[in-house]
Amino acid sequence: MIELSKMIGQGELREVYLHAEDKTLVIKIDMDPRSAVYSLREHSYFSSFIAGRAIATHFPKIFGMVETTRGPGLLEECIRDHDGTISRTLVESLRSGLIDYEAFESALDRLVRLAVRDGIMVRDFSPTNILIRRKDEDGAFDIVIIDGFGPERMNLKTRLRLAFTFLARQHSRKLWKQNLVFLHEKLSQVGGRR
Image (cartoon, rainbow, N blue to C red):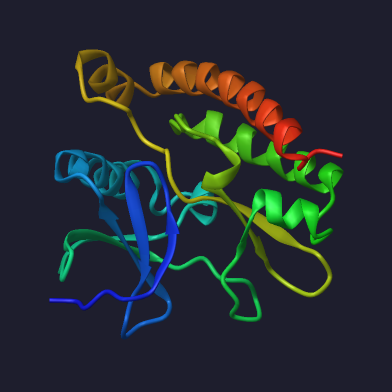
């Protein structure tokens, strides 16, 4: 059983803790045990549709479920910059001047094209679910989506999309159009867009 003590983030449904013995890992704990299905679905989606593809650099590696002092948790890669510091959120990165908006838009365009090509479903592309992983001192970075990916529910439509690539691409394109509108609205509200 893994002892949890240092919380480094919190979303609507989960708290995120730094692994006590391995600082390259985090553990997401569902605040409501009924929402544990999201963690299981996220792990399954990552393993089946993201791992091993070029787009995998835009998501944390997910290693599975573990038992902790706070109940079951999802074990994931801790997203860190080239210098070992925990990567900042999109808004923090824009506000601090770590990246500029034009560079972000260019990287985002590449990410969206890759995601649509692979039929990757991202259902919550809010600024708090996006980290900027700096790759070097010269400003190179990756956009990393840390939450809100995979299907929202597992029904017949979803199963068909997962089984047929052309349906997954079609749905992915629709989700990304919605996500980009939502993201730009949120960025203008929080002052992340200049």
